[in-house]
Length: 137
Image 1 (cartoon, rainbow, N blue to C red):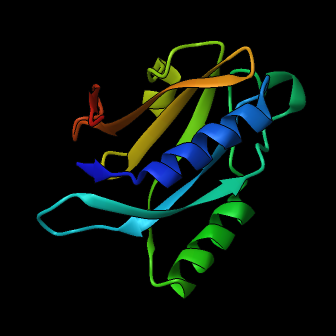
Image 2: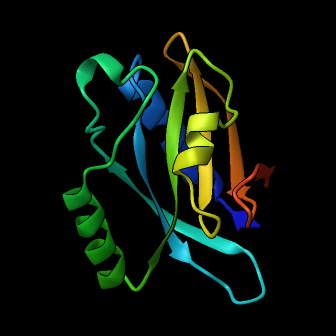
């Protein structure tokens, strides 16, 4: 399970609205507990590196940005515990593409942005066999 404070939920919603009609994306920074939930402490917004004409339904985090995020997290005593992105004019449900790109140990947060207004926000984890997502919230 993942714990996402309300101020971080609000920040993700704002990122989705700012990026509309494209997808926003970013990192979830926090702490993995050995037997408990992931605690999200901060978010780290990223520029969607996908080509402009595809940003309405895809996002890409550039490898150099991934390295910068890892360094940023380490410097803060945190870890990358997951990712967030928006679904412009679509529900906050993971797509098959989202599943194909995901890894089982991370949390994935999706915010639905309808006509530039953030709506539903959901959290997901991928099953160990990568067959399906399990909804966390």
